[in-house]
Image (cartoon, rainbow, N blue to C red):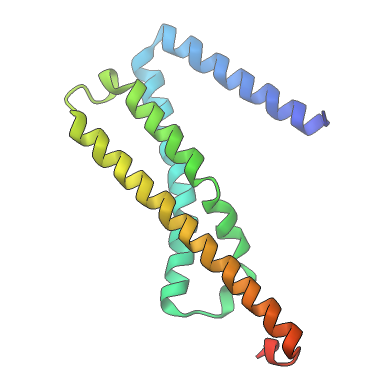
Length: 145
């Protein structure tokens, strides 16, 4: 294992231990902190999806060079969605004691739709890359226009 991978595993283990201790000592504050962290991660991933969506809808061409950055941001969307769903489901009695099954079903539907949107955008991006590669093989000068 590389040094950085060991550091990452150590940080994950430390965070998991802190969450476990926090759930034992102050579950209300720990669930709220886990919810906030999950939302931050989800919003960062959705920001990448929103950035790409706006540029596709506007037909912007200048951003093609930067496209990989928001694609990398949206790659974490499935993990963020699962983290948020687990946080809300497992901490529901302390976070939202008034919420019923309908709220959680609606949340699951929205998270699934966001992940599907991100996957569709990624597929469209890969198709566009494939098309440009094919175009360059046919006429290298045409691909630059």
